[in-house]
Amino acid sequence: MKKFSIEFKWAALATLAALIWMIIEKSLGFHDEKIRYEIGFTTLFNLILIIFYWLNIREKKQDYYEGVITWQKAFISGLVLTVMISFFYPLIQYIAYNQLTPDFMQRLQDAFMAEGRMSLEDAQKNASFDLFLRNAVFNNLSFGVVYAAITAYFMQTKGAQELQANKINKPEMVKVKKKKNGKR
Image (cartoon, rainbow, N blue to C red; front, side, top):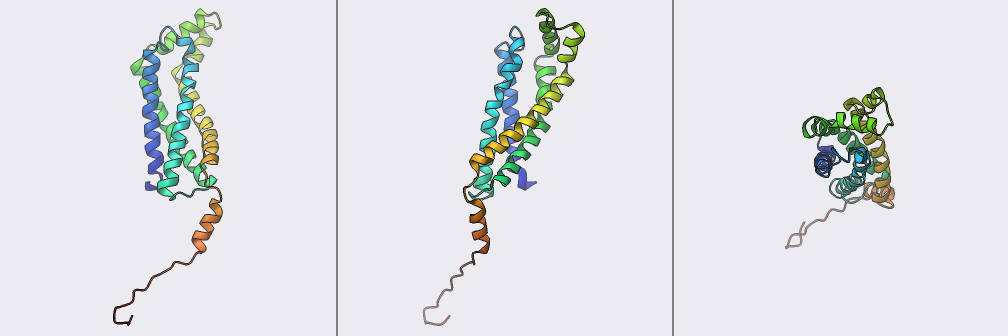
């Protein structure tokens, strides 16, 4: 588990940031009068997630791989972060839509029907906690893979394959101290 402690840390911080984002959404009225725009505002959080991916891979590169990381290792680190964020995200959804704004789904259904875009049945299908939960996990997984790949490309050490090969094939130098009387 120590191998993935950096990813766990950044997934926990991203989860906390998502909870704070939900509180900001509510305080700005996106759970009330601006509910129609909530999905668009929530999508903006993806820009913040990119920062978490970058910080995760940067720390993994510096602390775990000693400044040299290949694209594959950086990508795997990003994938692990993606899975962990997707694992934690249902907790955020539960807190946001059952604790923070318990009547959110009903308000969203009412907004859909008030615009005349949907019937009651369609509004109930499109504004359900289960659908939001599935979409959130799917979106986190799909966007996370893309973010991990792009971030890994920019964070990889140029020539990392050659540097690691040289490090493995390079003989270790051992210094021998001489005693003062000239004997070893």
